[in-house]
Length: 391
Ligand SMILES: *Cc1c(COP(=O)(O)O)cnc(C)c1O
Image (cartoon, rainbow, N blue to C red; front, side, top):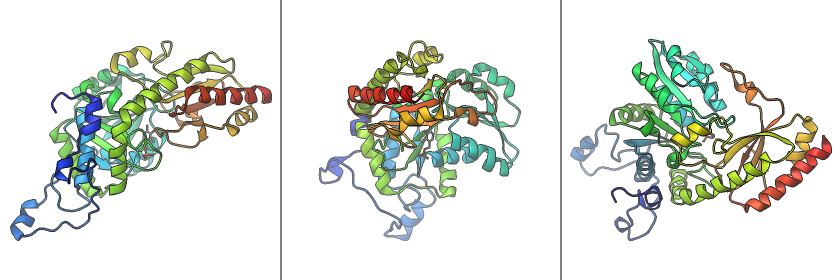
């Protein structure tokens, strides 16, 4: 269907029931070998990246997932990766060569930072971190050999919203490729290709899979040229995802719109409640009107997911432990985007090199799950009472 809305695309894209006995969901193709009936057919499949000729290159399962994501984002085509981090490293490796310079936001996801400062460095690529709030001023950091400008907006620990169109315009002017980790924005709430981005990267592990049970990544290319280069490099790296995990990603997409609306509403309920608490110094959530990134968020985004952070007023490590150790509904652990609520102490000040992250009190990241918001608030209320008692 042409001009379908995102919820309709999420429900139907990539499915063709009547090609498969009328069964609603597509089959999961477990494939390595693909047979050809004749030499002519074998040779025709040649070295194409589009068809089905060997499991690692692509199957109807990976192609259905990629088609759905690319359509949602309004890109040309997508490439599946076995994790979000693999999607990021595949995208970067596809576009850099020894002697190149890349600019990476200082708010970037920690493992992305490590890949840039360790592995890219060993490959002769210099990664320079830049102030996420640089905007058009990024122009001053661009060198003749700047090949990639990497964004993540908002950052998944500190939630600074970047001026994506201004940064992308400066990068384009200099001929650099613009990549964004769009995991927080999701394909529903931020449209990278409307803002000058060339590649949009997702940890599909988060809201696409949505149930904390599979690792998956996906990269959408805005144009055919970018996709060809990306796909060729992904094939060279051999990074394909398992069919059952891709199926879980495709299944997760069917309900992602409905889930995200509830994640968004509950996160805002929790954020507003936390703002009014005496133990909390500030709440970092771009959809709150007094957040420093709110104006840019309003301009460029159509929604917010369930992930945000708080800074507590200064208190002891024992008080933080008293708060977090006794949570009943909020689990403590890495990742986010599943159906359940999570809470985590974070230390963004340790992950900065270009800028200083200032915080007086301990920082906590929260993921609002699909539980009843009142039950979550009650859990937080008891936690903050434990914190106050231990302080
Ligand atoms: C989790 C995450 C990743 C990495 O995804 P994995 O699937 O865990 O490899 C990348 N970027 C952001 C912003 C993330 O939160």
